[in-house]
Length: 338
Image 1 (tube, rainbow, N blue to C red):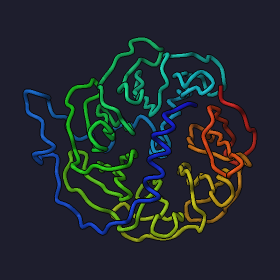
Image 2 (tube, rainbow, N blue to C red):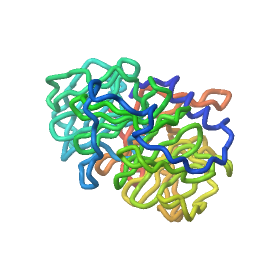
Image 3 (tube, one colour):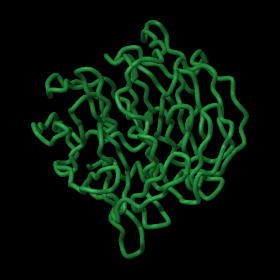
């Protein structure tokens, strides 16, 4: 599954060299002068309700959003065909190409699919491949569709968090913080995002901004009332913290290169073992190697774990391939994704 490789690797390297700052919580809101848009420019989007359906999982979104599932249909970036958007049933039948562009940050809501084409903007298409249209020229680093709102990291605006309605109207800036980082998670009316190695949260209307921890944060994933993250202040080892920023706890001395949490399990690429695919329980127990493949991004859909195969060169430096594989949660039945 092909993607804007240079950008994603650059984001990861920036995190690794970013010093951990000890900023206090700011009193920022979507009504700041820098974040306002006039009524003539846009109709402001409102916050999404807690019960709203989300277009992809938090774990997939912070891993590029290359795969999304709705009912028994999987929508995915097909690396064997230039990263174009495809759909297939969970049993492998009825495969269909939906567009002709390399697509990622895939979100499926109802009968529509939302996705990014990098610097070409954000698009929407019907699940049957008809009606493709551009929603915005913004270059998005991450997209999370919740209900009838689309939240995203706007790389065209320095990495600030934005929201718009799913029809493209109501574009609004929510955060005044800019810097490196391209991840966003949403849980219980709060947006969680990483900027220059620090983890923040704000309400979905842009109010009540909070710095969650003084730890430097690399990869992260919000699940329920917990945030799982690689702690840059402790060698990027695997930690967990409450969503209010309290109770940080080290789960493992393993250093995750990639990280996804689903079904009570943490899937990660273990840098101590050439980024091979590992899994553990969310309390840190039951560590197990699932595959000898070195992995880049990890997506989970249905009862399968998907990963981008990483090629390790003679200098032990990893680079992504265009080939994805899937395995069962226990590591069995390895299959290429085409």
